Image (cartoon, rainbow, N blue to C red; front, side, top):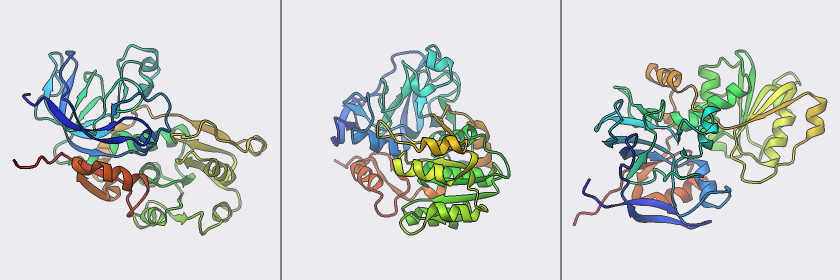
Length: 360
């Protein structure tokens, strides 16, 4: 490619980020792929990063780990994709050799990891992005014919994280579920629980009423409560015969939401948190948990369930496009970080379209 520089959103320290010119990525290993970003999205963990709330993120760093791309160049050992292919990008890549990779924890890979976060990888909030170790399964997934980037943009991160949270809680058909925090991941959990996992009852909880209403209007929640206006724990207990739900999926990672989760869970139930904790320690009501035999499970997704969920998207069984509330080009990404990060204008998910270069 003749182009030497590209536009990218660069993080340079807490609350310091802007669109800058950076060098174009180049093939440096036969397993590399370079792609033109055709659609991106902002993740809450991006907001945590630029606020300086995540440890061990070195900067300057190009942000972003949610995107689709058009392949423009491939290394000599890449055979499963070719220039022109439209692909979904996994938020993290695995070298396949380190201990974390052997344990299946891709995000902790010492040589790869998550794009635009901890580790060496530059992110995808840019015109182009390099995918190293692209030969490994699920690093790049071709978008099936008949589907658009909008159909699949939430698959590798939002849906996969929700999948992990439900699977980690050993969620079973016929169980009851409360989702505390129905942002994109929480809404994805509601979709999966209602449409795929066979939940008996799904309860959506959030301080943002538009998100509770969205879950109800989409038919992916049976009940919705707002802590600003409702006695949430009392209402959940009333809705479950005084017991509480079988499983709580917690997404914000705050002291008050963790305490609410425990109080809303039945004896011998499970609290499954998939939060990116921005505080180093979240106090827990441990005695209450011990006396009621409540399990706490936590962790990070392992890129599991992608093939199954992609088939469900193709079949129309699950659809997440209702969350895609905002869209603007890379030119306006600083504005997007502000609106998405501050929950303004009813924003649930901010999509990023390619950079628009001015006519000269």
